Length: 81
Image (cartoon, rainbow, N blue to C red; front, side):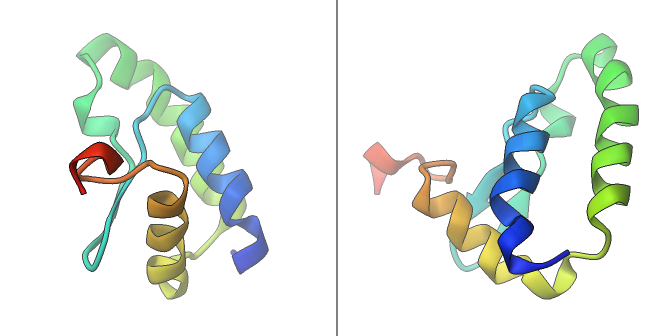
């Protein structure tokens, strides 16, 4: 995965219903564990396809987190900062 792929990656993950969230200074969460069991089972193949298509992203951890925070997908939520 390259830096310029981050917005598309985030959009695709969010489109599955997962609340992908950045935690400044820590990293990010895909949010799949928060889904109800039936939705989780439906989403997992989609997430696998997305993550496989983008490839390794460990080297972009900080950039992905910063992007998520910049678009308001952060914890704590922007109104709490």
